[in-house]
Image (cartoon, rainbow over all chains, first blue to last red; front, side):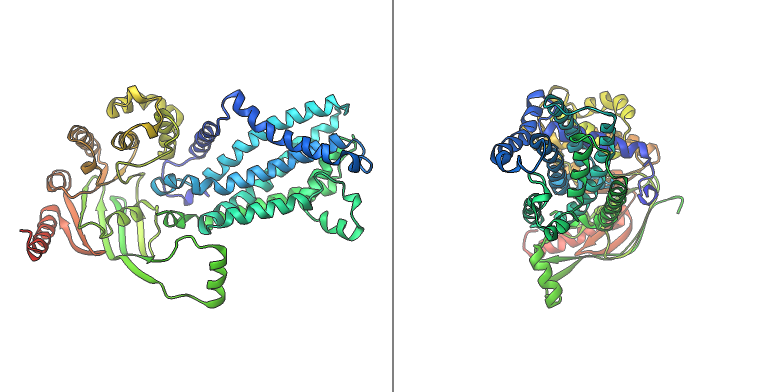
Length: 263
Length: 254
C-alpha cells in the first residue's frame, strides 16, 4: 500500500507519526487537553442518559430488568458511533489546506479524527463501568469481552467514516443527509427500549442492524453477566472488517482528486 | 530516469468552470438521469513536455493565470493530470505560495510540528532541527502565539522555513520570493544556494528576472497553458520578456 505512495522517505513510522501529530492537533482544537474540556464532552452522554432515563423508566422499567444499566451501555456505545462517524466525515473538508499543500496519504486525517473520538470513548467507558458497579452490577471475567466489542465497533466506525469523508468532499450536502440518517438510526436501534416490545416482524428487521446486535451482546456480559454469543460476535467481526476494507478502498479510489474540489 | 528529477510527457489538465465543484447529491442524481449537461471546460495545460535533471534550477514563467501553479501541483502529485505521464524521482517538498495556511487556531509551535510531520520529518529529526528552523524564521518570540495572530507574511515564513530544512531532493517554489520582504528573501536565497550545492533540484516560479537568472539554468515559458519556449534560461526569459513587451506596446503602456 505505502509503496504506491510516491514520496521515497515514506515508512510506517512516518505514517504513524503523522497520525500521532494530527491526533494531537485534534485534541488541542477540541479543548480536550484540559480536564474541564473533557468533562464537558462527558456531559453529553450523561445528559442524554438522564433525560431518557427520567422519560422512560416507568414504561421501560416494566419490560427491562435493570433499566438504568441497560440504558447507559446503549447510550455510550451509540454515542461513539454518532460522534466518530460525524467527526470523521467532516475531517477532510476541514483540513482542506493540508490536502491542497502537502503530499501525504489523506486517510491519515480520517484515522486521526476517529482515533481522537476513540480515546475519548475509552474514558467514557471507564466512567460507564464506574456507574455500573455503583448500581450493583457484578464485575466478572466476562467483562474482558469489552475490548473485543470496542474493537469491532472501532473497525465499523472507521470504515463508515472513511466512506463518508470521501462522500463529504465530493458532495456538499453529505453532512445534512448523514445527520438525518443517524437520527433516524437512533430510533431504529434499541438504545432506550428493548426489542421485545416490538412485534415479531418489526423485531426481526430491527435486529438486522449491526449496531443493535452489538449493543445487545455488550449488554449480555456487562449488565446481565451472561456470556455473549460467539456466533453473533464472529459475524459482527467479519462484517466490520468488511466495512472497513470497503470504506478504505472507496476512499483511496477518490483520494487523488480531492485537491481539485477545494478552490 | 536515474539522473532526472522529473519527466513529464504530454501533460494536459482540463477544468470545468462555471459549475460547482462539489455538487449536491440531488444534482448528481439529475446528472445520472439526464446525462451530462454542457459545461464550459477549458484546458489549463496542454501538451507540456519537460525533463528536469537532478540538481538543476528550473524556472517557470508566464503571465498570471497561465497554469504555472497548476503545473507545479501536477508535478508534486497534488493534482492529477487529465492526460499525459508524470514520473518523479526524489522526495518533493511542495512549497506553493509563501502564505500556506495551516491550522490558524493552533500555536506556531504546534503548526511547526504538524507541518514537519506532513513533510516527512520523524519526531527525532524535528527535535534536532527545531532550533535551526526557529533561527531561520525568527519566530522565537511568537512560538506560543496562535498562528492567526501573526500577520500573513509571518505565518507564511513558518511553513516555508520547515520546507527549507527538510531532507528533501526537490523543492517547488511558487512565487514565494515576491511575497517576502527583502531581508527574508535574501535569507531564502542563501539557503537555496546551500541546497543546490547538495545537488538538490529547485523548480521556481517567479516574475523577477534577477531571481530567475541567478538561480535557474533552464526554464519554461508558458502562455495560456501551452509551452512557448523550453531551454536555457536566458533564451526562454528573453522570449517571455519580448512577448510581455509586445503586449504592453499593444496597450500603449510602453
